[in-house]
Amino acid sequence: MAITRLEIDLSALKHNYTYMRSKVAPNVRMMAVVKAFAYGSDAQVVAKELEKLNVDYFAVAYVAEGVALRDAGITTPILVLHPQPDNFETLLERCLEPNIYSKRMLEMFSAFAKAKKQTAYPIHLKFNTGLNRLGFTADDVPWIVEQVLKSEHLKVKSLFSHLAASEDLDERDFTLHQIAQFDEIANEIKTQLGYAPFMHMTNTSGIINYPSAHYDCVRTGIGLYGYGNTPEETANLKPVARLKSVISQKHIINSGDSVGYNRALIAKEQMVTATIPIGHADGISRAYGNGVGYVTIAGEKAPFVGNVCMDMIMVNVTNITCEEGDDVEIFGTHTGANALAQKVQSISYELLTMVGQRVKRVVLRE
Ligand SMILES: *Cc1c(COP(=O)(O)O)cnc(C)c1O
Image 1 (cartoon, rainbow, N blue to C red):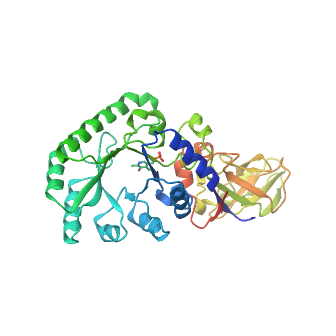
Image 2: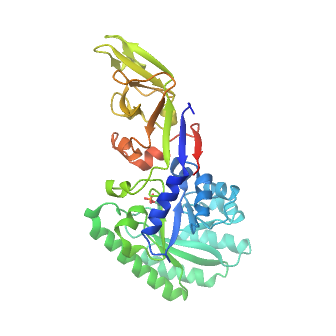
Image 3: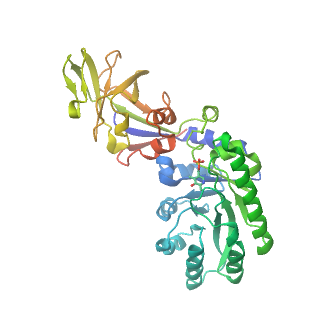
């Protein structure tokens, strides 16, 4: 298909899911993180496939993302990592389960569940053990328990926390401290509540690096999409998303001529460029311009020429045998999203999630 498209390879997704699953004990639940359109791919398609593979739970960032999964017919439980009181109504209507991370949230959700005459509505309590982003602290425990125990409207389904540097083994001591703190908090809550919500703490690199912190459930995002946070991890995985395009036009640029906006490139000698219909509006940052990034054409690296435009890039194909209409890979099999992102001091997560919504998603089934 000769247009700009993001191929979504479901056999790669299955491979990655099976690989991540193999890293945890059979009784440990798998929570698939499908926020941000399943890391820029297609959350509905990805979630449906994972549901077929018997994933135990989904996590999304926002309520609207959970709604999209329910609209697609997903019946697996969905944890909303970052709900807002303004969306409690929708959350409840669509049977989404909120992360409750602060006193304000617990008070507001508790009052809401009561007003809606709910019984034992599932909530998930998040604890801050060092990331300092969202979460209760250890000092909040007695207050939380009091609130929960006096309310028949809520039931704590899980306790969780998030690691700040699971991919960085230089921060091992810090991470082990986070784990110890979470242990302590969770044990205290379980004792005081008189029941045992399930516990989860690790993301993809936490799953790989800290098996002692798998608890009852793990949360995997980037691993499912084919990337680890080290080359060794990534080698075991397959990229799910492949961003591809096509050569619209070739140009012969004579010495002294310029290419693109601001005449950012002035040719020092004759060269050949290819114009490709993808630009910064599609998630290709301007930072890749002027030779920083490259695409793959006929198996060869073609560096960016001049500035990235909104809807187009130009690349250098002087030494590449190619024709108008030929296929171009921006990232995927030849160049991983992590390798390309590194060129601009970014990470696979950012490049993947920036792929714009006007790029057609093409699902490749087994
Ligand atoms: C996004 C997110 C994850 C997934 O992390 P990966 O590194 O992609 O596996 C897990 N937990 C929380 C709380 C998150 O926000």
